[in-house]
Amino acid sequence: MRAAALHSVAGSLLLTALALAPAGSAPAAPAALGGAEQQGTAAAAARAAATGIAFGKCADVKDMPGAMQCGTVSVPLDYAHPSGKQIKLTVTKVAATHKDPHNSKRQVRRQGALVYNPGGPGGDGRYFPLVGLLPEWKRIAAAYDLIGYSPRGVGRSAPLSCEDPGRFFKAPSQAPTHPSESYKKERIAQAKAYAQGCAKRSGSGLKHFNSLNNARDLDVIRAALGERKLTFMGASYGTYFGALYATLFPSHVRRMVFDSAVDPTPEQIWYRNNLDQSAAFESRWTDFRKWIARHHDVYGLGRTVAAVQHSYAKASAQLAAEPAGGKVGPAELQAAFLSAGYYDDYWPTRAQALSAYLKGDPKPLIEQAGPATEAAAEAENSNAVYTAVECNDAPWPTDFTVWDRDNTRLSRVAPFETWDNVWMNLPCAYWPTSRQQPLDVRTAPGQLPPTLILAAERDAATPYEGALEMHRRLSGSVLVTERDAGTHGIAGGPNKCVNGYLDAYLLQGRTPHQDASCAPHAEPEPKPQADRAQRAALKESLKGKAARG
Image (cartoon, rainbow, N blue to C red):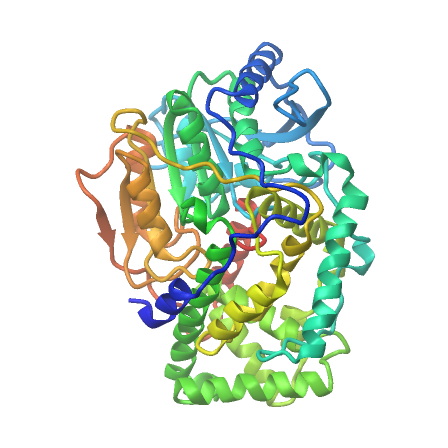
């Protein structure tokens, strides 16, 4: 189990966030279930159903395996005005193979389209259909057209931008766990400039990039695919707007999988969820250090959690004084190790890189932690969408003293990610558009078909309490827990037990009679295994690694 003390600290913070809206504006009321946006969605969906999607060759992707096709769907920028400005979303498809991977003579019946979102906000699901090439997904790929898409703002789908991509990577950078007052002032200035840059570069339509519109877009995609009802899998943030969809359009749902669920409680969106995430990452960082300590004979980084922490701190201090390769400083080191909090497949390579660096070889660390400048435009776009959606979705504290107090307290017990999370989200304190009030996710008994929630007990990006809350709010849902494990996103991963429940649900519509659990998947071997690392990288790229959630 996770260290409950960390979560109780986050939960007991006195969050004086009643005066959250920007000066001179009030939070927009949550969209009424029968309001103009709902009617606009119906009109847009009807138009999309009549038009369909003209799938064809993916012109912007080279040397792609499989038979993926691309097309576009037009959706209103503002659903209150469905005949107004339209934006085009990129949609991808690999048709159902009909091939049973266990019996080549058996033809599998097509069950429709499975639409997937990888989370973020800002994650791009465009390459998801290629996941059918992996063994764990072949049964599902036989029965479903696998559908990925770039959500509004992402990639070619009316892309958002908040700053010059050439300036996005500011490496090397510092990452103080106890920032000084002068450093805080510097980051406040950067957050204000970033928020203004979003408004300047993205224009008056910025406020329409939010989770409710992501849910509405999903219904238009459903209609354009010719599906009477939606079969959907969302991971991380994708579970949140998937839950919004279930609340807004329960009669349009066929099957829904929520993989690593976000806590949808309106008061949690998004400031409090980020506090909880910072607390949970401290526990996961401890898990990683314990694993490294157990393999001291391989890495030489210490036989105890404290000793491993000392090795990490030593490396961070050295990088602060002299960045590796001129581009890896403490912030880049922290970001590389934060990714290991998401996926334990990264543990061997990250530990090996830290060990090599402290022994005088910086090359592995530079390769793993150095900024991928060739992907700067994609990274800047993803970050812009992440920021816009989270800032637009809900009220945030507009007084930095609130952030400072809450996170100073939290950082005393959870220093690993706390301040990094603050700087990531601080533009929301100075956001130039009006905020929404989050919709109350909730369905009544019998209103929604059975849905499946998957969660790892020690997931840091979306703490397990979020899955429990999602379960309580979606009547008829069933929760499958991977015990004592912390990988973020467990569908189609290494746990055969979890995959068994996933297959039974998607292929047969069958859920357990009651909540179920699976033993954890095996921990990674201490020495990097090329095949496992390659498979992890492939899965991550195909499913679309989220920016945060």
